[in-house]
Each structure stands twice: as C-alpha cells, then as structure tokens.
Image 1 (cartoon, rainbow, N blue to C red):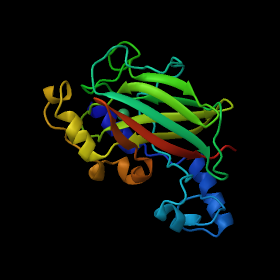
Image 2: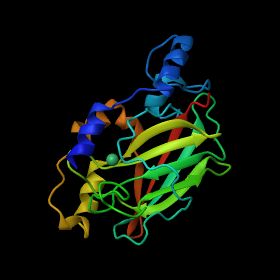
Image 3: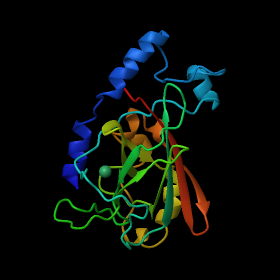
Image 4: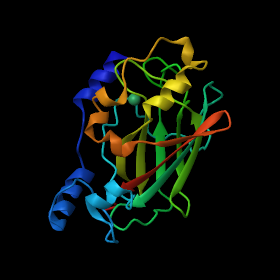
Length: 233
Ligand code: FE
C-alpha cells in the first residue's frame, strides 16, 4: 500500500476549519491552537487540565480511499473478522460546546488484515458507513479494531457533514499499548509486526494526540470514544 502512504504523506491539508481557527484565534488574542469554551477553566490551560473537552479537532488528510455515498448503517463489518469495536463518536460545536444533532458522520478504515474495500481491486463496501448523530451529538458504529498497512499507524478516517457541508475531515488514533494487545490475537496475529507506531506516523504528528480515541475493554471487545469539536460556518 505504498501509494496510499505516499499520497497521504504529501497531502497533509489544512483547509477550511484551520483557516477559520486562525481567525478565531486572532479574535481571542491568539495562542494555544485550540478553541475552547468561555466557561471557567477555558483556553489551553483548561484543555490541558481536562476541564474543557470541546476543542477543535485537527483537520487531517482524508487520504485516497474515501468513497462518497456510503451506506447508512451502524454495523459496517459485513461479517469480516476482528476484535469487536463499538465506536462512540460525539460531535460538538467547538465554539459553544453544544452537541450537534443530525450531523452525518462518515467513517472508513481497513479491515483486520489491512485491506480497504472498494479500492485497488478490492471489492465490497466493508468497514465503511454513515450514521447520524442523536440529540446528544453521538453517532454509534459497530465494527472491528482496524488492522494496519505499510507505513501508517493504526487509524480510522472520519468526515463530518452538517447541513450537507463537510465540516470536518480527520483521522482517529488508538493507544499503541491497546493495539499491541489486540494484535496478539487472531486474525491480527496472522501478520508480522506492524511497521509504524503513533509517535513516528507522518499524519499523527500533525495533531493526532488530539484525535486519540479513548479505548476501554468491553467483554471480548472494545469501546472507543471521542468528542470531535467542529466549526459550523
Ligand atoms: Fe488510511
């Protein structure tokens, strides 16, 4: 999957939201690289202390494997094997911290053996799907823990659409220690060791630490959550 790697490496984009972020930061007097709420403990210090969760989630390249018009469905596995993963993706307005209801959250990732569907001679639509956020701003997916492909750390691609517009394009990451534990199990263990971890990944270094999923065990599987702060206008 060299092509994918190369393509993603050269296309670290900072479109849209980051331009807006620049404007907002200017209005706030700059600094920090985050947009926080106006509540007590706001600003970069509030983010660092965990008091503020509605930071603007960094824009990261969508890569070459996006397919438009995916199916609206919660379970995206199409029966493919892997460690069960429930994704709990919340969308909030980065400037007000309020949940955004009815946003379309679009996810895609490779299967447990590192293959994407619908590209490079691979058929099908597995590991791709769209869900709408509920009143709490939450979209749920049932999938499997992603595998890996050459040159990239483990990730899930995400796009958020509000009112027909893309308001966020990003990638979500996993704690390396959790991935190590998952990859000791079948079917992941059928492959050799992965060749990239978060710290050295060319996309992760552009803000990936703010796109880390919070992952916990749930039975024989995992639940992974994140709050994504987006700008609407
Ligand atoms: Fe990818």
